[in-house]
Amino acid sequence: MGRTILAVLAGLVVAWITITLCEFGGVALHPPPPGTNLADPQTLAAFIGAAPPSAMLLVLLGWVAGAFDGGLVAALISRRHKNGAALTIGVLVVLGVIANNLMIPHPLWMTVAGVLLPIPAAWLAARLVGSPRKGAA
Image (tube, rainbow, N blue to C red; front, side, top):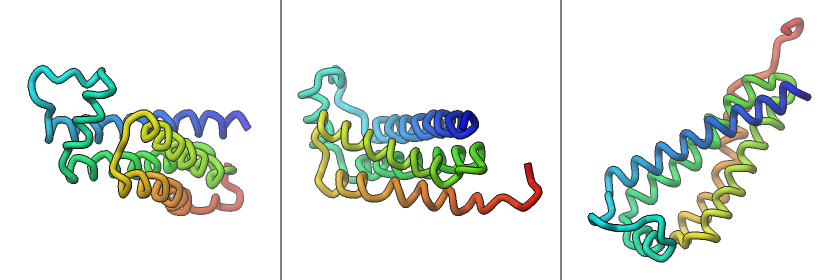
C-alpha cells in the first residue's frame, strides 16, 4: 500500500511538472501584452479568451501528456496496483481541469477534451507498463 501511495505522489509531481511546462510554453509562444497582470482573474480570463487555438492546444496537450507520463511513472513505481495508480493520476488531472475551468473560463471544446482525454491517456500508460512477470519482485 505504501508503494502505491508513493507511486501516486510521484506520478502527480510528474504530471504537474508536465502541465506547468506546457502552460509556460503556451505563454512563451503567445506572450501577453507588456504590463498585463495575469494574477488578476479578469485580466487572465480576457487573455485566455483572446488566445489563439494553438496556445489552447498546448495547454490541452499538457493536461493529456501530464496524465500520460504521470500515469506511466505511477504504474512503474506501483507495479502491483499499476492500473489503479495510473488511473488515480488521470482522475486527479481531470479534477484539476474542472477546478481550473471553474475559476477561469476556457473554450468549450477545450473543457470537453480536458475532461474526456486524461483518463484514457493514464490508462494507456498503465497498459504500456505491462503485467509483472511471475517471480519478479
